[in-house]
Image (cartoon, rainbow, N blue to C red; front, side, top):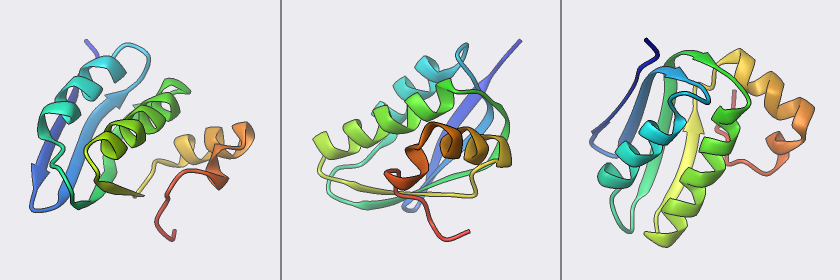
Length: 100
């Protein structure tokens, strides 16, 4: 079974497990509950073990959610597969990615 878990520690949102079309809605719902208002948040994706193109849709939805909560996101430790999909789709230039 595909699972994804979202937790927050300090100002770090940690996403772990599979971030695929089967899990992104669950991940987004978890993030909506945990994402604080008016903060700068690091979204750490180092524990994502599998992803697909839906993971990029998740990132853009998370940006919309953070904008609504007047928070600012920075994505770190993106899986190689996610970076490759982002480059092919052209989203790497508009997502707030940390230096790699």
